[in-house]
Each structure stands twice: as C-alpha cells, then as structure tokens.
Image (tube, rainbow, N blue to C red; front, side, top):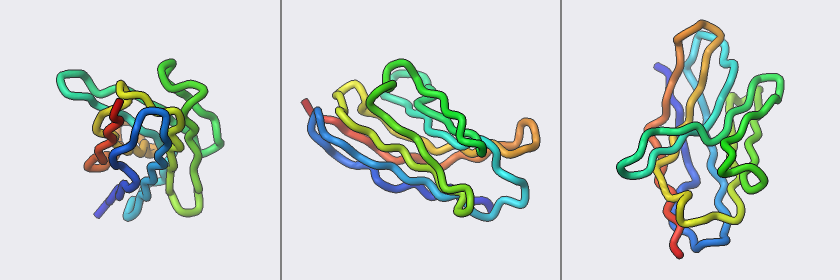
Length: 117
C-alpha cells in the first residue's frame, strides 16, 4: 500500500519559518516528480513547488525567494523549507508524488500550516 506521510505543519507567526517533510513508501512504480500543493479555505488547490528526480524545480510566483524544495531520492522524501511566512500562506499543504506512468500519482492527507499576523 502506498503511503505519503507528511510532517512539519503547525502554527507560526508571520515572518517565521517551517519545514515540511513527506516520505513516500510502498510504490512499485518509480517516482518521478514530487511536490507540494496547498488549499486555503474557499480556494482551489494550487501548486506550491515541485522537484523532479533530476533536481529541476518549479515554484509558484507567490513563494519564489521564500520557499525552497529539496528531495532525497534514495528515501523518496521531499522537503519544503518555508521562510518569511505570511498570513496568506495559511492553508492545508498536500504532498504529491508523480510516478513514471502517466496519470498515476499519489497524495498525502495534508498538513495544516497556520501563519498568524
């Protein structure tokens, strides 16, 4: 059974930092891209950042320069270092893993990040 286990969410003041982690296990299909999405109340889920197995990254404009995504391929683990957090970063953050088979992807259950002003 495939599992994406997220950790690191919580409550932080504006300007603070958090680090999210997500470990993917149980997949019989190789994992290509891994990333983080977020969904705030009343809004659609949006891509925050993604990283390929080769290390190429993609960020939402709203987090460029503040968030850094990285991964450990051997552990199928992805990290999201979030600095200079803003209240508008408050959302449920979901880990995503894209396999090498088109259309086969996995999602974590989400971890809540709350940034107070």
